[in-house]
Image (cartoon, rainbow, N blue to C red; front, side, top):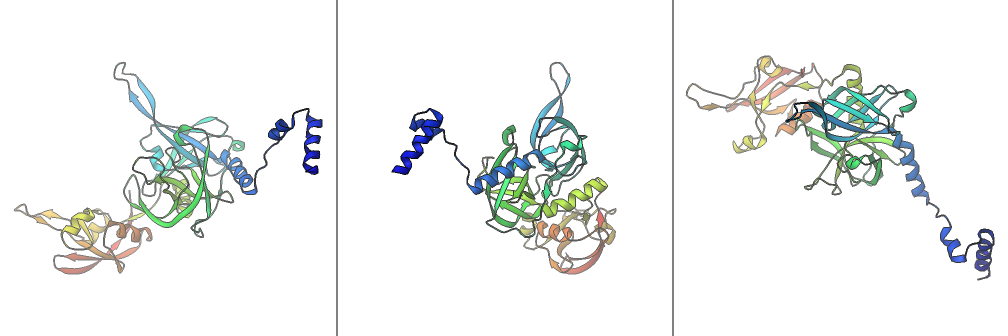
Length: 352
């Protein structure tokens, strides 16, 4: 009791306030983990940008052409040369792009290139180097379920916002919003990812980039505790190719195939070739397309059942195997042709 009385008396003598008021005015100190989170946000916020997607529209009354905002999202500074990384779906269909930096300066952005299959895009802005603070690129190969993660973005067009959570799952698979092609090894997190967070960074507790926030699982379109991020190990290779060549070189068979449900109805497992143009790698190798005979009856094309001795049950399996191949590789395609199985070597080519 004596100690408490002395402390209060000192506060009153030095501040001139009533004891109760003096105690309320005392600053609240942050805990160690709170301080670390605050520092992480302050240090990395200058690296996160706001992207506005503008589309050209003609006024129906005046016929004037105007640039109208059709979407927005987040992105982050990749290097001192002005490269900005974001999701492809954030910039899709844009005729004009604006990038707002942390100091609210706005720059016109050019599209360097993009990878629709992995939902990654690279932009470029002409900004002074002293305004460009790239994120520290980490690794996604050694992530663990349960470790803390932090998402920074601009949800709903607000200023920089931080959400925190943990990694709740690894090696998930989602589909690209643009092409439907599967994206493997995706990070699942319970850190809130709302509209406008797309394209923003997912950071570990050290402030290192480990992924790009790309999607949420929600019927209502708002965060439901299940968010997905493209792992940085996947992103790094894509960005390097885009910066160097302006595009991503990915091998293709050169076919279009039927929906998985259609093949299931036939009672077989595999990928049914609908079309294999003669100019493409599969067509050159002799894979057969689905067509109609002279009587109008449907004649099924080849059904791909394996690739390089790896079983192919559906389109997702086919894409997974192709993602591990390179342009110029010769792959052995096993097909069901009528009631016989045949093996056809195909030399993979790049997509135009």
